[in-house]
Length: 145
Length: 391
Image 1 (tube, each protein chain N blue to C red):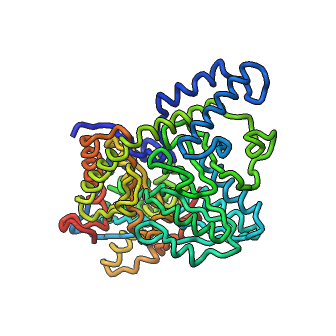
Image 2: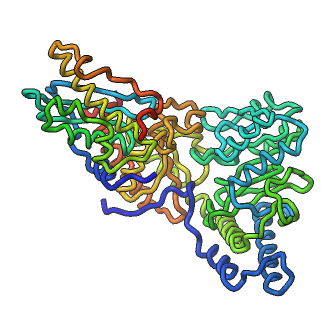
Image 3: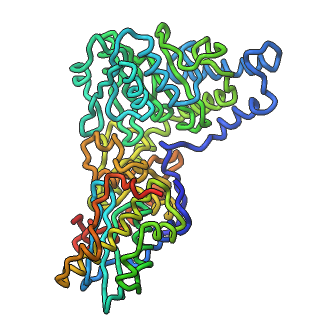
């Protein structure tokens, strides 16, 4: 299996690792049984994501996609962050091996889960805005290129 | 710590030894004759091939006429299972549930031809129980196949006892000895097996060549038909250079075993002791009935592929049976067979030591694993860093 240099760089030097203790939204997706768990912390001011941190248990691609997703949404408006797709994460990493595509889906879902939590804390039903956070099917294959 | 490079994945493959390379070179250059031809350079190839066969036979306690050169472990396993079933009137094959895929998938492939595969489970220590075999074998069992040593956790199976039970019921006994050959003593008579499979690149020989031992009088159907090479049982122009490389490597490995085994066992135990000092690390497989250079552990709250990539950055080559390294979402069947939960098996690590490892090298590996685990745990949402334990 061959990872791009960008994936290796983001795995070896992940950006925005950690937690935000007073986060405005926290999302966790994945499960330990499948070997990937991603947790995203968002700090939001005036509809702008001013800070983002992540924690990930998972393979090289899981760490790299988490890291890249945080880079892509940091400084973005909520509206922009909601448009983040797994494809954009993959492209920013110069691609992923086919069996690792589900990691990029998980990264997209982690951002959306954190935004849902943000809305929930505001007393707003997140589903009309963020959409349903789909449970991944066992292999995430429906998302493959 | 000053960065080093340590290749600790010798169960995956080993570097070619100087001795093996030198044994091969003449037959890659001027000695190109086809052993089946009659002129001088062909006769020289034939003599080299038969000498290699004799050397292999001596190393395994077999007769030269019981030794067949193959393309490696996968071919040998396929040949044993499929050849035995195709030849027999019986319909059953019993394999352990920790076999290499070459055995497992060969057996499963025969199900569509009406054969029945039964799996012999290992206990928590990774070893099968002869009593379990006795309970499941019957007069419809054509062949029992249990590996001599496991490729993931290094456990050694009681092959002689299993072979005796197989023979009581008129079944053949095969063992995949790919991980064992050159690492522990092998005597086919003591093991009592009918068929034994080995592969050269696991003991510093070249890739793409192996040996099938088939006991005199045992008949199995050919897997590869053609011009009738290897006394009509395995066709294809003989790979003389590779056969010579295999024989030289095996002899060197067997000759140095009395010195290497105790030394590597001590290094292995030092490594196990050091790794078990890292919090929430657990040994997999039996501590004693284990290959001298194989260490396997699971590291809680760490995922295997991330661990392997981090170790690579620190200069240590290792492997894992986690889902992510296998290209599926399931961890290896071996780790599940010894009763590990999925979430634990994802953190598996296998280290197989090189022959020239010393105490400093072992300590470096321990440092590297501890460093990698710490780094990955710090970014793991399932690890509580302040409490220093899994969540």
